[in-house]
Length: 329
Image 1 (spheres, rainbow, N blue to C red):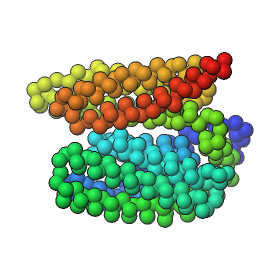
Image 2 (cartoon, rainbow, N blue to C red):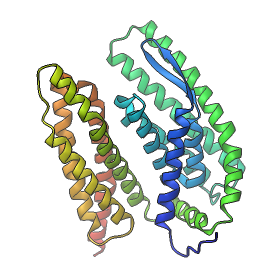
Image 3 (tube, rainbow, N blue to C red):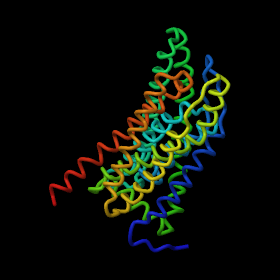
Image 4 (tube, rainbow, N blue to C red):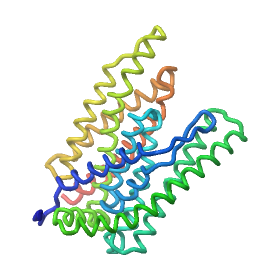
């Protein structure tokens, strides 16, 4: 089927991003778990589809597919506490991969840049994953010997995953791309991805991506984690007030809608997005403070910190653009 796309196809971007995100989830389920000193890691195919997302969809859409797909897997696969950091680490993996593979007018076609992008993305994830594991082990007060064993085992697993991802994803991306380029819908997506690296809309694109990532993860976290937190509180003879969490989910849903409008150059979208992000930021500050003082929420403290970081980064990309627009006016 040939689809004429003289303009950017937002629907095509969304469809292919969602498809790759689903493949990331499915691929991550195809894995071999490895227990490590009370923790666990795994060797599987998840990273293959993360790298493939960056190579096929470019940095932003590919990063979104890899990050959200991996974050959702953690939430439904029993790794909920690490979902936010996984989302960021996998997003950066595909983002670095796509940014290099699509740079220099390559648009993901030149084999040397494709290989360099895949290797760089995998190495970026290895470093972020091991750094996260080191920080967690130190915060838990683990002995140096235990930390060394933990990091050594995880380093072997993540390097094996990186090699598998690069060896499989690079030739697979070339074969899939040749097939997709017969469809003009994909050509519109390719044009959009290339413009994300060279056009003046890069700051807005990054802000939109960050806001969508935070909004999706916020809604999923509330839906998945709140019932278990309330159940634990009931067993401990205490109670957790639920309405602020559902308020945060509602604000995040509105934030996602406004972010989509901003991506489509909607009128007044910047003001609405900033308002939603500011409210989300305030709720994240509340949650972080609550998690710091309530034992039942303490293990979810990293989620609040990650949300704060994402929202502050998104506002940092939005506000200068808004001020610049006012000065030009």
